[in-house]
Image 1 (tube, rainbow, N blue to C red):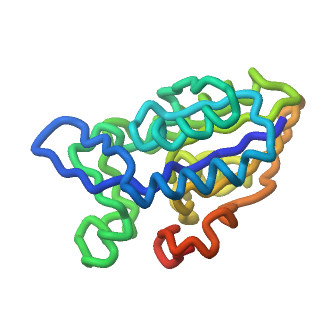
Image 2 (cartoon, rainbow, N blue to C red; image 1 turned 120 degrees about the vertical axis):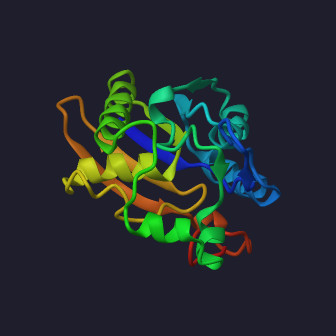
Length: 207
């Protein structure tokens, strides 16, 4: 089967006193989703999964409508900081030289679960999705940390290498998965649908 791990589009900045921030998409993010949906229109998705967080569900919704498939939410592919009271796009943190940016570079972990628990949750949930769809093409709209976690597992990096690359907004990461347990990475950071659009893509790129 072929698994498409898709990072959500650009969300708005949201900072609360308490409670989970869980932002929706920014206007630019909705434009990104439009290009993503058009790009994948020539492919057939047999199933579509999404993290329960707003930015993932809002990214998945137009794709589901285009493909004529329902969205199945999976708690196991939610981001590691899903219960954080703040969400600031990493590009804004970097531009402002925010201390939280340095903390990310230093690999500091601020979550309700340990890095090990997060890794086990993500890998277990994605493997359940793979097992349920032999011979099919399936997409899962999720998060940068989730994509880093699973791809580092597939290519055999150290368990601490959860941030080994930066997944761009609405980037597609394809994994071929066999029924015998073989996993191979086909593409990483597939973002040709954003080229020439002028939309933000990630830390150092724009469309």
